[in-house]
Figure 1 (cartoon, rainbow, N blue to C red):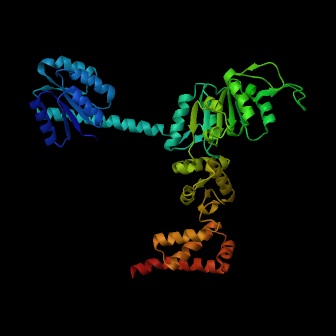
Figure 2: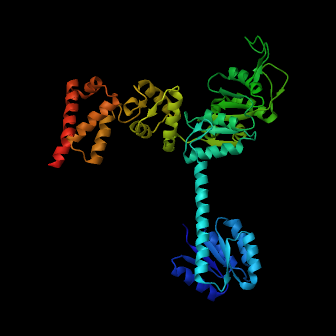
Length: 463
């Protein structure tokens, strides 16, 4: 609970008396001789639990100070001090938002009780604000999954832009979920009943991409035996998603810019323009500003596309999103059969940097589901190619680093090495024995020895 009190009174005797009274009861106190001085103090240090102010002061009076505080620091309660003849004005102050008032001369107990109630009210307001913020910080939004601050900021931005038609540019590394964000922008807004039409600008040559986007008329080129509607027409009234827009050729960039400016298309080989009502959502994993500097991307098109930018940070920068993403992928990929992730499996997932982002995580879990024997995925079911504890010649280096950090003995180091190899081979002793250069029976004997040691441990501790 915030307990610091700001006392405002132009009478130095009253001001000092209230300060001494509150200080003797453990309240930190800041004093101000005028309303203007009080506002400066409140603006400089906005964590006051309560403001106690005189009602009648020269210049800005208590009511004016109350109005200014309500505007600048609405969560801070205000207690008015007033003489007996100004009770009606004090009641008016409460109507305007003051928490309470005390009448001079007042007993210490009366002021202290009023302050405690004001501070409890402030604590309740702060707690409600915290709970609302926590409720707004959700683990999912539409098909998007993640509870990090970055993802919740994206959720909030999508809510704000959902009902306008401004173009959106989504940036982020491959596998971060740019198309999922694009679909969520579409499904959240007023165009949700219209079509969502995606196209990958990398997947086809320039001539074919132009025909796909704008359509063509019969005879426009060899093989054009009929008229064909383009994707701009197909997306009319909805959203056209241009994935990997940074790979579009400069020639086609110019034609796209014309469509954005005129809101109409002309099919390849055609002479008639067609009006279209389409919201463009584009995505790229490239640095378009760098491409502009190198002459690879048109600056005027960039500003037309980048009206509302949305950047998705890589998964390694938001590790708190790995558990909800993993659980969502398992639920989706398990096709209705009950399946969960063990604690060890989740820890193993969380320690990986996931250079392939959410797409790599999904691929890993799909493979793990295929390997899992029962309804629970264990750490040994999860194969992470870039894990330093799994192959690529880095296992020994990782073990050595752990030995230095933990001060392991040779015996402990050997056990750790064997456990790491067994985990990397999903518990397959034949493969582990081959990597370790020992007989498979050695691993079985090791297991029996460790079992005996664990069974004898209580007796040894007792002796």
